[in-house]
Each structure stands twice: as structure tokens, then as C-alpha cells.
Image 1 (cartoon, rainbow, N blue to C red):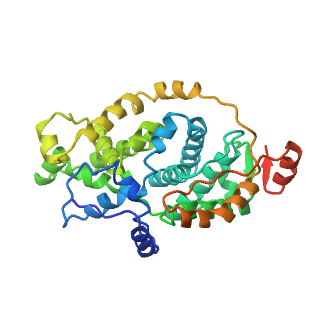
Image 2: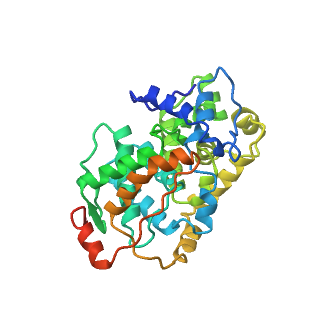
Image 3: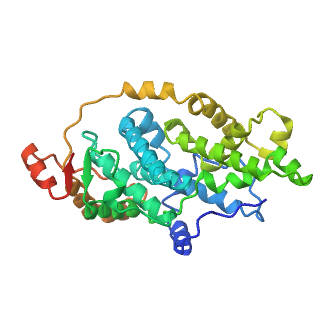
Length: 347
């Protein structure tokens, strides 16, 4: 069973061209990640394996998360909110993964104010809105998307400006390769699935349960920063093996399913899933609770977006490999409240 990408947007051709045109600016990915699976020229999955490296955060992003240069507590809160809204509206699993993908890719190239949470919340709303527009047949209004008692409620025009900034930073490559692009392929390649298909005993219910369990595992990986180390294909393979209860040291798994020169990444990802995801990530949550650092109060959403609009294009032209933007200087508290009033409502 071969895999065809699940995305069918009319923008596919333009996305492909933008991906190739920006390959030089994405070269910083290639030295860190490599596919863990053989790439055959005649395989429909080969394009996905070659493209997935260009839809990941910058290679220093995980290190910055680990040394707290990135506010991982705010990231955790943002992802939790995305998953809650995703569940509330019964969005597709890939919508949540795309949201987090946009979020991390943006955050790996930009500096956001750390305190009070409005910047991360605005980014979360924008990323979820963009992902929903890519995948969902019906998308809630921007105000309806901001549920579960958010601390701030942003006006639609503010979210739309943030969406434009996100798309610009991502070079308009929104059709990212995700673990869900590989799920059907790896499930069909399981030794048990292949044997059942050959004998005519294929069970669609079993495949559906395996897909559902694998999807849950993939969604849970978004809460743990250590999974940022692995490309989507590795996460998909580990999730399928974990959901199916396959032993990684089984010769038939290594030869038939993985069949790769390097399978250590899959084993590491599989072990991480058993340690963090299946055990509800308690160790990771304890680490994150210890993170706390006083930062200056941030400027308003409009101020940051204005600064980005003025500087993003020139910065990327001068430094193609870097798109980081420092927020403007902090205004006084009274000015901050007045400038924020038309665009964000404090709850």
C-alpha cells in the first residue's frame, strides 16, 4: 500500500515552487536530520521523505528550548490550548499537528515577549486558524475560535495581521509534511498487516484502531520538547510500532518494516514515547513547573506586529538564514493599556 499526501489544496504547485526556491535558506536543516528509511526513486513516499526536512524548526530550536532561551512553559500552555480547541471543534488530527508545526517553525526564527502571555496566545490563535483553513471544511470565526476563557481576546484584524506575519516567516510553505502523511504507509507495512492482507484476512476495524491509537500518540508528542529532535517520518514509524505493540528487536520488524541503514532514531523515538507519552509526561511537566524567570512587560500586540511588518522583509533579504525580530522597547504601563485597548480585550 503506497501513500499519497493527504493535502489536496489548489496551492500545491505554488507551495512546491516556493519550497524549491527557498531550499538554500533551508539548508541548515540538512546537516542535522536524515531520513531513517530507504528512499527509492519510484516510491510515492520518497518525495515526502525528501521534503520533510524543509518543514521543521531550525536546528538550534531544541537546544534553545532546553536551555530556556525559549519560554517552554508558554509553549506548553499554547499547545495545551491548541489541543483543547482542536478537540472542542472536532478538528482533524492533522490540523493540530500543523498548528504546532507553524508555531514551532515561527518561534524558532523569532523572539516573542515572554511575560503576560499575550504574544504566545496571539501566535497560537493565528497558527490554529491557518491550520484550520488548510484542512477543515468549516472554520469557526476568529472570535469563536478564542474559547476556554483566554486571558486576552484579540480582534479579528489583529489575528489576521499575525497570520500574515506567520505566513511570511514560513515562506508561505503551509502544506508541511507531518507524521500523518506516513501513517497509512507504515501501518500497511507492518508484518502483521502484510500477512493478513496476503491471506485475505485484512481487518479494517483493526487498521482503524491502529490508526486511531497512532494518531493519539502523535498528538501527545507535541507536548514534549524532546520529540522536536525527530523528523515526521520517524515519529510516525515509532507511533505505529508503539501502538501495534511490536518489538523493535524482532528480526522481522527490522528487516520488513524498518529496512533501513539507520534505525537508531526510530528506536530512540519509540523509547521516548514509552517514557513520556504513555506515562503521561509527568517528568516533563515537573521540569517545566520549575521554569520561571522575570521579564519586562511586553509591548502591545499592535506594536510587535508593526515592527515585524516594517523589518521582516528587509531582514530576510539581508540575512536569508535568519528571520529573528526583537520586540520594540517597552512603553509605560499607562501607554500600553491605551494602545492595546482597540485590538485586545483583557479578560
